[in-house]
Amino acid sequence: MLEIFRSIIGEFPVFDLVGGDPIVLVDKLIKATSSSITIAVSLTSMIGSNSRDSIYTLQQRKLDMDPNEPNWDILPLQKGTLLWYCIPETLDNLKNSKYFNKSNLFSKSFSFKIASRPFSAGVEKYAYFARDVKSKPAKEMVMKEYLKVGERNNPLEKYLEAVEVSTVAHFLSMKFNLIAERKNISKVNFLNVKLLRCSSIDVRTRYYAIEPRLNAEYKRFNVNTGVITKLRDTLEAFAHFTYEYTEGYLVVCDLQGIELIDEFLLTDPAIHCIDPLRFGGTNFGEKGISELFLANHRCNDICKKLKLCNV
Image (cartoon, rainbow, N blue to C red; front, side, top):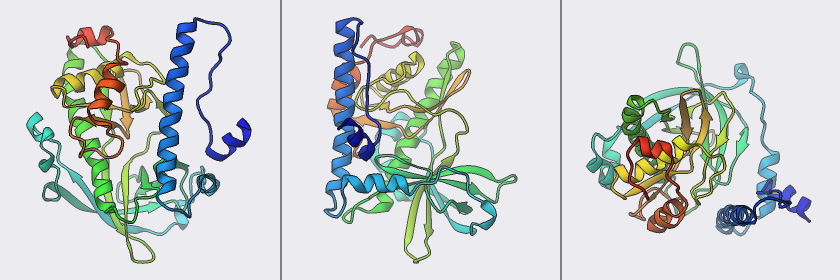
């Protein structure tokens, strides 16, 4: 039965229950269960939005993927418009949701090529190989498209939400790195994510989130449910820093990306915020901050170096 279940939805958390400290095993069980429930809720939420969808459709989407680099010579040149927000200058700007409105968007024209099929698919998004063809040499990019935005939702708003999350995380990483550099702590950086608006073959407007490609081993360090998948003191301290710097307004979590010698380069973060109307469905609000971050966080030596309050 497990094999059938795995064949439908893919891998799920598994760990060894033989031997070891019973308290540690119980903790592992709780964390794995929490992670599984979160994934299941995300899946059923997406599936439930359309009665024609089923869990088997997700597996079919996986079968439609192509993990190989495309032949760029035969792919058509396409054009679109890049949109992005300016990095906030102050904490007040960051807390002001009106700062992130369409009047504060910057834009420029963009020429690109994109693979015909995605190389990866998560619960929320497809990921495609892409190239910024105007750069010399051409820049390797990744373009991400939401699997299902929903008929009642404005797709533009959904993508702008993702760009806002990335912009806020980038602002906070800049503040963190100013201190980290002085204290010999590894830096935390986020990829520069922009929104791409373009027309597809059927002339309808299509949107993507676009970012530089990470050509290194990709790791997921923690998730927005509070589960730590790969413990890194610097990243746990960074999350703590975002909470303290914003005076308890938010915490940046779901940290994933690549680990370099003296830097973490991350993408696709989530944000728990006391304003439940910001940062999308992965924002679990005040409960996300108190029950998923604060309840699980254990201050470490990096927290002490940063002189963060013990939470």
